[in-house]
Image (cartoon, rainbow, N blue to C red; front, side, top):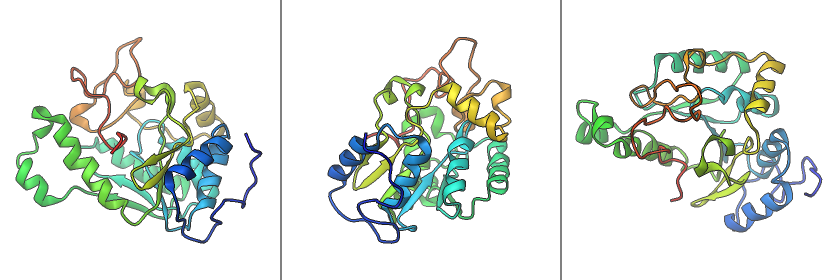
Length: 247
């Protein structure tokens, strides 16, 4: 791995990045894929104009870790939260707690298109009939629209979370954009240690048996010994909402 050199991104901080996204992602992964999460975030923020890269978060069980890192580097980075209309009330309260605690200056609530919901989910029960379509309407489409102004986005996924994420790189291509996964290499012990080191507030549902938290109708407590994402879409052949699947 090439040593990390702050301020030496190929585009340079303060200029919108343009170029071959696949080649750029591969180059960044080769040079910096083994860097620390903080370094990966700095590299990503150095590569793009401040208004050309966004953070996408669910304000879930472990979101505080990388959002704290981001707040230490650039608290004015746009942070996108997809308000599906189905989140736990505790998640909304936690979002407000982290916004205040971390000093995040530009948190944007992204909502589904009301016309889409009126046409396809008028009574709000689509999740029980077609969970994939519900996620598409309430998460994938709203995020796709919200990301239009950006050339790159960051998120908090980790390889240990599921088999579908096991080989996830730190830098990857997502359609026309670069997607950055700063916590890709971190495991549960790293996350716990960071929470303790900085005394970060925990999502209140974690203590109630929810180590992975999504929308209320499709999230359940896990049983002892289960994978941390076992409570997501329980009983369905579904492991991702769709926003992290290849276009």
